[in-house]
Figure 1: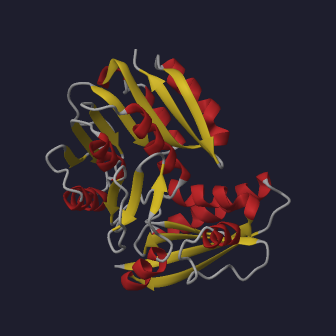
Figure 2: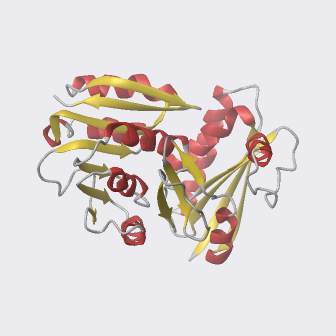
Figure 3: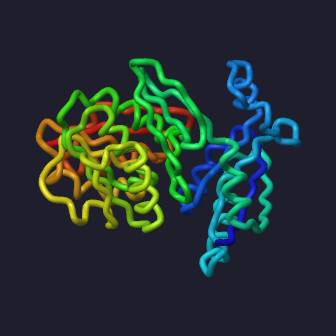
Length: 308
């Protein structure tokens, strides 16, 4: 498959808005090259010496990858319009958009340089399958090869959902994962002690990737992944529903959640740009779901809501 790499060079203040733009438009992978973050990782002893720093002083580079297909022209137009809105909302910053064509080998090699083993919370370790890591006795290692599916554990939205799962799962829970992507949250739930996890995604590529990752982590006996849209195909009720999506999809999902959530259950809802959090909260309240926790990281928000 041929890919188009869209490169946004932007001031640090606009990096999350640019990354969110790519996620909203369905990018098959997003990379943020932030000099400050790379330098911090290096100072902490992580092996990031081979990563280049953006050449424009004070700038961050955000890369999004899209299939070179019939929808690319519309996506590029949407990117142009989205960037105009970002720059209008943040008039003090500058942003430049470039685009180039890549083969699949170049695409894979390009973004994998930025995906390294990392620790999340008390004991979760997210490790790409191509790296070696010797875990401590208390650590739970999740091996992920995201392929063309979103979900490496490095994005703030995924990190917050992982932390919430670590907090809420005590053992024996039934978990639904809506928009499973690479399957990282479903696998984490199983490794933390959930008895049954069902994940769904509307993208066949994501479903294939998630199933492979489930097998890689040896949790096939407790995790099943299927192709579908939101809660289509689900039966019964869950102790925990996790949905790391977008603000618009969370608002669409809100009214569907109550029948699938046990009265004492919780829904972990991530992928929400912070300036949309009020709208999302209104939709949740209208669906009869009360927020027990709202957390933020960078420019992203996550809600944990109670069942009815």
